[in-house]
Image 1: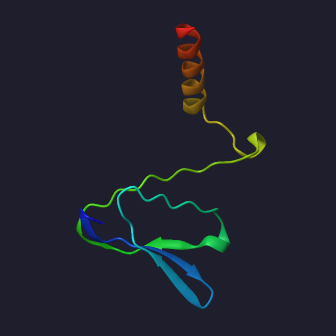
Image 2: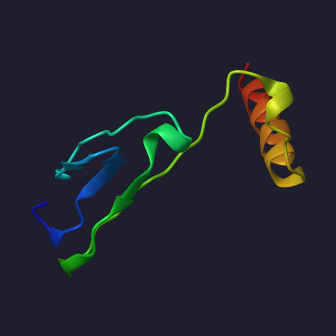
Length: 83
């Protein structure tokens, strides 16, 4: 990256590790779980930022905590208030 050194994303595949060098605007998207074991090499200079997000396609598999439920209620209220 331009603001840091190191911090490569490494996928640990059987018999071969694959590395991905981060750069501004890069989106690395992959399914979670054992087939996609990964790590990040140490950042040797500067700061590296990452945003991690998990998605699901089935509501039953993702219980909603009370804070998230309250945010969803507020979001519905905010949209309804603008209409």
